[in-house]
Length: 187
Length: 252
Image 1 (cartoon, each protein chain N blue to C red):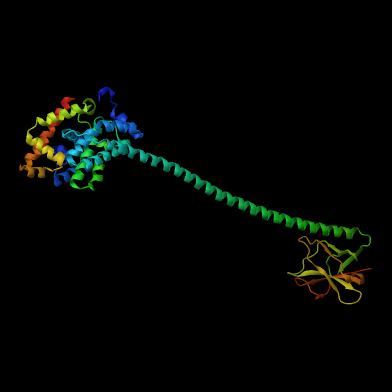
Image 2: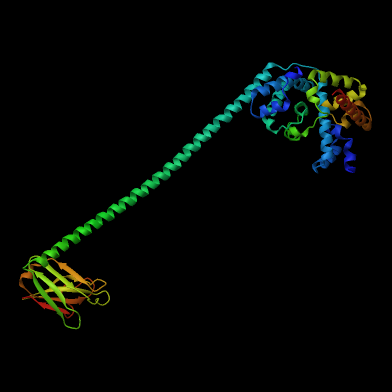
């Protein structure tokens, strides 16, 4: 979607808070593909992914009044909520769902850099993230993916990759810091 | 700040959910104490971690999700609006019912009070009618030329009484500054015939000022009456005098 046609996320959220369904449709059209792809990657079950995606956008609808202005947070909020729901399903820990929702109050995010979400088109951002990740050593990528998509802890990753715990911690931290730097430079 | 330095390296792993239980608990305990620096660091890390979602292979969501989503947000909206009207209507009905009950109770009280007032007025009117009839009778006796004035003199220092005697219309007894009978005793008027025992003509008590206007209807024996007498008797009077008459007045 061209940048000029995009309504600012905060304006959309204000519309959403006023129970404007057209705002929900616009946000769904903008983010549903990314959210669905993420959830499907984690759960690997289409039916489960559909249920979780609908649930995530319903949460957005219900919690729109809690949203505050800082840019770039909405996509992060949606994606983090979707990931947590998917991981909860993966672990069968539905009881944790409520706790994670509480942790994910919309104001628990601040932008990694000014205009991060607004100035980078979603597709371009996806390409950028993939490019930055590809630039990392495969070991770093693997460790980060095991944590992000499979919900593994440092120890579990160390055991799976048969590497020392400190090494795994270092790979993940270094990898994420490079990703952040790369995204900041892109803006 | 030293505590923050200790946790600084954990921001990304915490946001990623990769910390082991011990580290996670320690860091959460630190955050709970309200460390703004670490909270901001974690928020930035979450933003970066969220971008990893773009690494997932692209997949197109089925259209049914959007359809179901929009249906889901429409239903609660309808449900949300309907109860508002229902509650408002229910509240209005409840308020109206309460108002009606109170209004009914108020009207019932008013009706009851009105009935009581009407009863009192009717009773008062009946009393006035009786009083008026009595006064008319008294006036008729006083005006009638056939009426005989009887002076009743006391056998002691009591003031005299006057009786207006009419054979057919009855007796009117008047007095002023009369003393009250003792205790609950009463005065009793007697018609003393020429022959035979006295006949009671009723009992009376002076008012608070000692005044008396007593009217009694005629008795059959009044034609042969020789005198009027007044005794003091126990409450309710007696069939025959039990005390010596205080006032006596002969008829001519």
